[in-house]
Picture 1 (tube, rainbow, N blue to C red):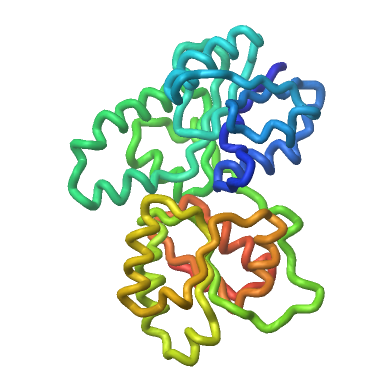
Picture 2: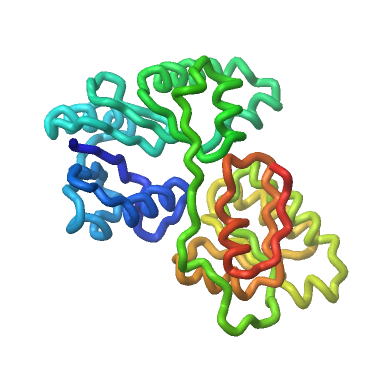
Length: 289
């Protein structure tokens, strides 16, 4: 059997939740007689897996062309039996068996709370079609499965919960030291609730905020300016350290040296960082998302 995986999220210098899932899957998978075929684009870190698996770099002028034209052609040309997409999308006009990963629906929930349902209708219709074309939908928690079943017309038997694991490198230090800072790791999107974290940090007694800087590990995207302005407003910008990226090795050290790890997210399908932090021995403050 030829099993294909879309690995576009495995990028050099960038670690996303989906990218981590894909990397862990590829590191651990044992084909057992099957062939694993990887499809990438020019931004993918193919050096990591190119020698172990058959890898194809596809070219396309834009994402939708890659999804529906380049990828569809490649699946047919390479005689793929099963295609696994770690995204919320699939090439629709292919005959092979299709499996898609839906980690969570956070991008729908905040918008629905803001009373702009009309803007979501075309997107939800497209996602409904995509889920209808998939033979299996994998999600990472019972909560996410319940959200999928609540918002979409999908049979429960079609949705499988597969819990993600934590890499063994995330472990406590052999000689633990006193924590040096308050740590957050993740993206800066609104549902991560960093506004609340910065406000709470701004209300700490000066002797605490002076002793424990707030370290935020996450790529500075379009939400950064608003968060930086909030830090200025609360007078703590000089005590917040912004770090765009950390390798897995650096992340382990960051967790091990944290006085506390804080994860105030409003909506999560699973939530990797709190488990990684606990595995490294860091105390965790976490919302009930």
